[in-house]
Length: 117
Length: 345
Ligand SMILES: [Zn+2]
Image (cartoon, rainbow over all chains, first blue to last red; front, side):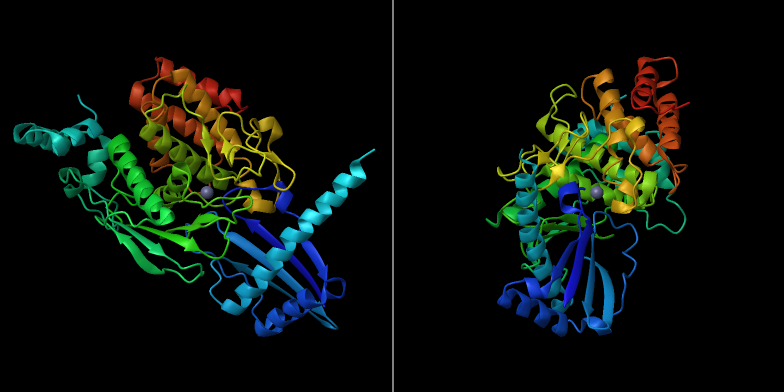
């Protein structure tokens, strides 16, 4: 299963957090991969509306999440503004957010090492 | 003539005779503001002249604990008049929504978000390790932060003021949350947020730090705040968060589809113009520069699709009606816009 995840918006713009992350579950630790697959199933991801619903009038500093999941012939992109009340979708986004944080940091450590003369 | 916030202070704390005189002055003062209070826009739930006669205002705060879920509203943790709870996020939200209400009431004679006593609802402990704060169209919502990069989002008075001010903009101009109008929407929230802090600390324009969100980053972050109004682009430069992307001049305007067309990016340009005007005028920023910007923010001709140049023109027009065209105020405002590459004429 392959996933793409991106968060936009919020009270400030942080260039370091803007890049989407791409995950291939075959490259994850077994339990991390299983957790993601379980979240995708519990969120009934391939049956969800693609969204996003319009944010409420006058709202500001809201964050918008974009999740794409590809599995076999299936591909679906779902976009949702916070707050995300559905606990199943929230669990998936929280799991992706945690991975984004971890991967972002590894990638950056990598870059820093490659930058060294 | 005494300004309304001084009259309110007298109405609140003076002797019965002083109180009567102050209430009379407030009720009969012939400003645009009183006209607005007597004749609320048709269909709006205006409270009419009562707003001017109620010296205590109608500060009605409710702080909810969302219990680390995203299911609003959560349970009531502290209501108006209730004592401290010992929960830092609850008590900070309560105190700082109060400070923001008092600022608008005393500095600009505004009665809450809608200028008609709207209740102030703050929701804390939203989400898990949640690193954001937002205005959802009717309430203010604050996360606890992740403890790694961000502290709890109630820690900065100016962030609370920023969110409440989004409500003010919604009820006044309704600036679109996209492109230049969106950057102006963000700009007004940063200006009000910073002014609330300066007002509470009693700082002049020279003494103020002109940041939004100081204290929000943990010590692991290389940065002082979310934004700087005085030196946009210098608030943070961190290996994880990246570098503060705000421009300080139209030459560096950022065209992007991200962030609703850069609403949190290009707001740096009008932010710096406000800082330049406030420091050129000197003294307390909320008294002259803030009054000009507030008059612009509530100007009925400030349309939802207003861009930077038209907004700049409206500030110059506000100066002329508040202070006349021959004084240092107009020169300061014109030079401030010129300093960021915007022609306000
Ligand atoms: Zn904002």
